[in-house]
Image (cartoon, rainbow, N blue to C red):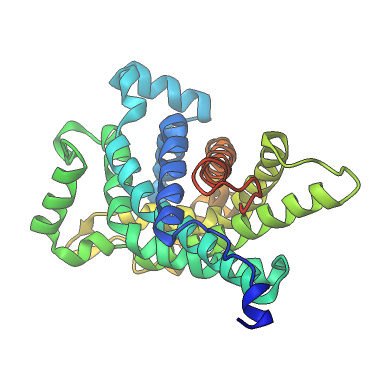
Length: 317
C-alpha cells in the first residue's frame, strides 16, 4: 500500500445540488408568506397613474386602507398562489444556482469570492431563475392588480392554475413570457446587487471592525443593507416589468413596445421620480424578504450540515 493511499484524507460530505435548489425555494416561499401584502401594495402603486391618469393612492398606507375597505382584509393576499409558484421556480433557480456556483468557486480557487466574482455569479443565477419564473410572475402581477379594475374589465382568475391556463388559451403560450426581457434584466440587476452585496456585507461584518460572529444578527444586518442597495438599483426595471406584464391590447396593438418605451413614457408623463414609485412598499417588502430568505436559507444549510452531514462548519453564502 503506498504512502499516498495511507494518508489520503476522507472525502468531505457535501450537500447535493438538489438540496441546494430545494433550500433556495423553501427559503423564498417562507419569506413570501410574510411579505405578500407589501408586494401587492407595490404592484398597485406602480400601476396607479399609468399613462398620465389620475393617481389612485396618495401613499402606501392609503393604498392598504383602500384595498381593505373596498375588497376586504383578505384581499392583501390576492395572488398568493402565484407568488408561491414564483418563489418555487424563480427563487429555487436563482438561490440554488448561486449556492452551487459559490461552492464550485470556493472548491476550485480555495478562497472566498471577491465582489466581481459574486456579481458575475449573481447575474448568471438571476437570469436563469427569472426565465424559469416569468410565467408565474405574469400571473402574479395580473392577479394582484385585478381588484383595482372596474368590475367589467377584471380578468377574475380563480387561482394561479386558472390564470396560466387562460393566458395560454386566450393569448397564446408566448404570453406567459410577456415582459421576459425586463424581468430577466431586473433579475440580473437584483441578483448582481443583492447576492453579491449580501456576501460582501457579510464578509465585512465578520472580518471588519465589528468582528460579528456567524448568526442571525449578522445575517439580518447584511440582508437589510443588501435590500436597500437592491431597491435603489432595480426599481425602474421593476416598474417596466410590472407595466408590460399588466398591459392590455389597444386597437390590436400592445400598450408598450418594450422596456425603453415604458421608462421613457413614465419619465415624460409622470416625472423621473415616478421610476421609483412605490419605493417604500418595495423596500419594506424587499428588505424583510431579503432578511427572511437569507436567514431561512442559512438556517436550513446549517441544520442540514450539522444534523445530516455531521459537520458544524457553515457553508452558507
